[in-house]
Length: 303
Image (cartoon, rainbow, N blue to C red; front, side, top):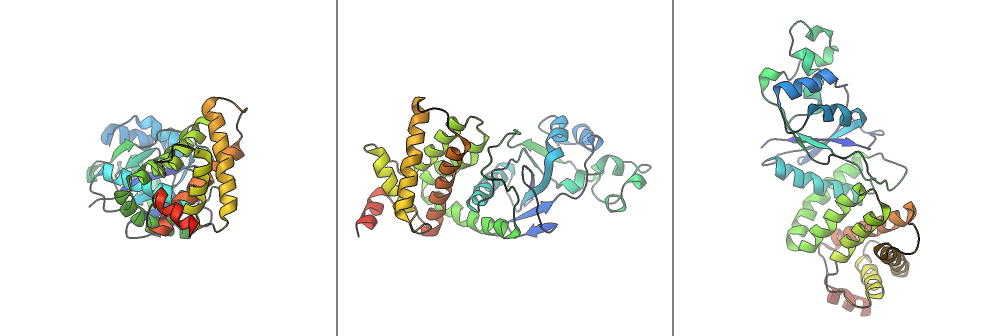
């Protein structure tokens, strides 16, 4: 089955090697410039489901790409890369954007315009003179997350090889967990999409939608009960349950103020607190290999 490639924005490679490989996915550093003429060649001779001009804009700030291996088709690759993205967030990688998905790696269309011409090919760097040309097949591309904006969770936007390999392993386990607990999909989708909502209040509400999805039967004394349940759920990864309880109650208070339009403007720290809480909740589900019910968590708390 084929691979699909997702260029990443707002991530820096740091001290990564040129490629971090696993059987399921790979993380590649971008090595070569891709010119406007290369993108124009994609638009004229290949199968892009969007204007080639978008690539010229998006990929100026691209330093890494994720390869999803052995995917049945593009929608299957999209779902897998979305789960991997959230698993990277659980490794404390700051939110990032993957605007498009492609059938070929950046290397294949870097220098493509000149490689397609026998007379121009020699003007390329030696390393780019050989490789994919348009007569070899059709490069296809689809929009995936067509946005430039993402709320950040920290000053560091680098990714390590260890974070990537751990996230790939976690993605395998998460896929099985999500199949058994549909609430986890709602929580995962909230984490994936919240950073792209520019308004902090709306984004924080979206994060809390993900947290609350884990506890669907809580409808009374919500702040108190959610605080207790979150603290107990997270116990395998955060032993200080009192601290977690207090953080959850405080963040839920901000969520309530945002929902009712009161309490003044939220700041970035309020958003990060809610984001970190969702990270810990999902990490705890991975550690438990399950999503316990409210009743199970209450019994644990009383034992």
